[in-house]
Image (cartoon, rainbow, N blue to C red; front, side):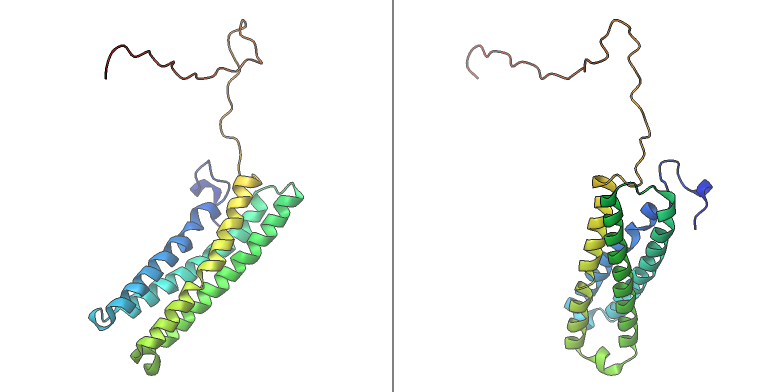
Length: 189
């Protein structure tokens, strides 16, 4: 758990700061893996680099998942819709953590099995399995975004609009910005 004094005042907990690491890392991992697959023997350490990135993705998914479980206690869940979205988000977050971590272990084990290392077809199969980790991450992010942007979980109003200081102004009147009227054209372009 991250102490409050280490967090900026605008963030309710560390989860929003941590959650973006596995999202970014999965795309970097897949890009490195695609490049390693495409280049083949021209990039001798390509599989190892991709596997290391997948391991970092799996570890960051674990940290992200647990930061989310700790974050639940720091934000109010006041509507049944928010509670349902949180439950769905939590399920997909666990599934994302399990799938990315499991995949990282599979890739790491594949480095030590000579039959897997020697075959490009095995690398292609592993790459396709890696693509499968995108779906649970997508669902996790989709439900996390819905919690914040649709349900308002973890969002606080930071700045209030100050009341009008002029007593002559009607408090129900709203100032609006109006578009400038077009000027009439005189002459040819």
